[in-house]
Amino acid sequence: MTEWPNDGDFESLAMERTIHPEMSHEDLAQHIFEENAAMAAQSIVTLAAGSTNERVRLSASVYVVERILGKAPVSPSTVKAPWEKLLASTIVDVETYANGK
Image 1 (cartoon, rainbow, N blue to C red):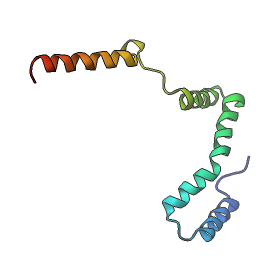
Image 2 (image 1 turned 90 degrees about the vertical axis):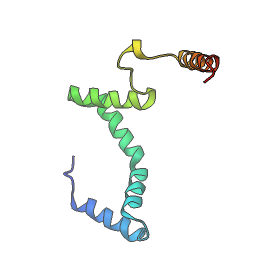
Image 3 (image 1 turned 30 degrees about the vertical axis):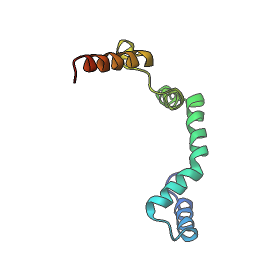
Image 4 (image 1 turned 90 degrees about the horizontal axis):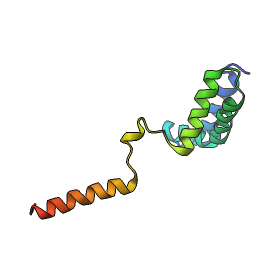
């Protein structure tokens, strides 16, 4: 594993700036993220599957699962199904209409 930052990293950034002088710092950062997203995703999956540190494996695994499935609810009893939300809002609408508001 190479140490970061190294001279190659700075040279690469300088080259990006030379190639895209019209880009703002934010746009250039976004461009670099887009170019390297697949590699970063692969790094996370590699850590999830093969890190020697259990905490790193867990953290990377949780990130991958939450990225695909979403965060797990804090308490299953507080999570309502979509139909329950619709029914509750319909009841409120009917009560509001019935009371002339």
